[in-house]
Length: 114
Length: 116
Image: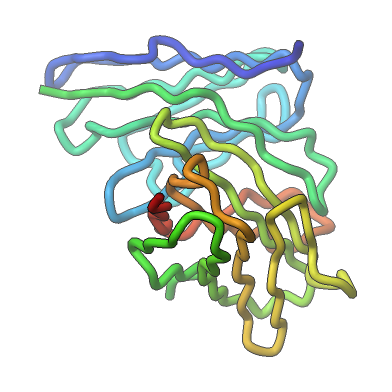
């Protein structure tokens, strides 16, 4: 069955370290998204991609970067982790057909920055 | 200004009763779509239901229905015959410019607790 996976599921790191969160989907979806979820804020968009080599900034992109070298993967990199980046991170993908195009989410990565 | 507003941080409902979760939205685009997702305590995000701005009828999916009032810019989720398994966070989301490929914008969510 097609799916979307994230790794690691839990990560503890220190302030200033570079961290990369992986996202892999097997639906062959064009669109991929990264969100962060914090209490009181819902889900906020970090970065997104509409296809290979395409990346776009979302609402809260400062301190994060992504690159899309193939259809299946969109890794999220925290260049220099900060305590404010402690959060649950969700990756999502969608076909990219517009309209009722539904986003399907991965299981999430809980990141703690000490 | 917030594009999606969910005014109820938390709600309680008795098992087997119906419950309405509120969602209001803000857009000047005539073409948009509204989505509801469920997030149980296990953390995954589950798509529930979709309503397009041009859809003539309110969307329904099993026990879920969407009370879409375009003039009021509201898209409330109605869950009929609540079950204990409905206890979860519920998020309303919107996509503008349906002909394009814009990302979803989410509200802050409503936590629903179903009481036996």
